[in-house]
Length: 295
Ligand SMILES: Nc1ncnc2c1ncn2[C@@H]1O[C@H](COP(=O)(O)OP(=O)(O)OP(=O)(O)O)[C@@H](O)[C@H]1O
Ligand SMILES: [Mg+2]
Image (tube, rainbow, N blue to C red):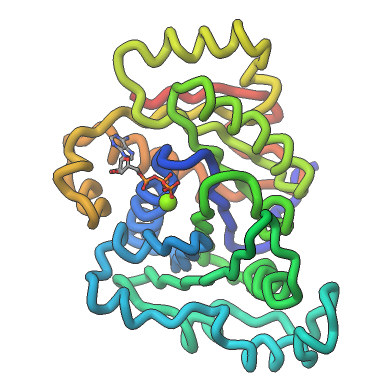
């Protein structure tokens, strides 16, 4: 029998570079907040594009203090200095969203706050230094109440899966366009998301336009990958020429009632907001691998 999952919901947005992750994160955050959900949008990308996409403004964005510059807070929450403990220290406390947002977050709009992780990167790939492990754990351990959501925008690629940043998240949105490489990365990411224990993994095909279906079909044939066996749903977001004109505050697309992109993002937001079950299904799908085409 389906049991409700812990209150609130957490969504990680991942995918190859430039496929539209940050645009989708900021638009989803906007529509969920407008629907009364308390949203915490988290920017994991060291390039810190999410503040601009949310329309924070250059000056306010430049004043954001990333979470990684607060070793004292991490120490308070863990009781242990990262340098002393090595990685793997257990949390004594679960910081709640209010606490973290109150100290380090930026209020973007009603019900919408932004947190920038500022994750440290080191040459040569995955950094498992203690600071990063504890920084990731701060995000993982944020305890959510009803009506709260965390949307985590990640940097391009799959490195964050190696750090298990999104362990315990309920949804993974793997964004791709219809290019062969983006779809390959997406299929690989789906496996990593499952290994992280994320129950619902959706493929979001972005910038869908004429010719996209044929490219998707070619990918299926040439790679032998079947989306239905890999993803819980396939969701299409149309190409939206207006986004370019709205850059960098792309959330203004959500004020365009005629935008097919805005309509598709709104439908996706409703789907994420439907309470998931521990059984790994969602109420829209009833255990089936389904395709949702939103045009
Ligand atoms: N559906 C769409 N139609 C048209 N343009 C889009 C669409 N979605 C995103 N874009 C545009 O694509 C560009 C890249 O988008 P975005 O920055 O969201 O990608 P990203 O995956 O976050 O990139 P990165 O990997 O660098 O973080 C932006 O200029 C954005 O406006
Ligand atoms: Mg981005």
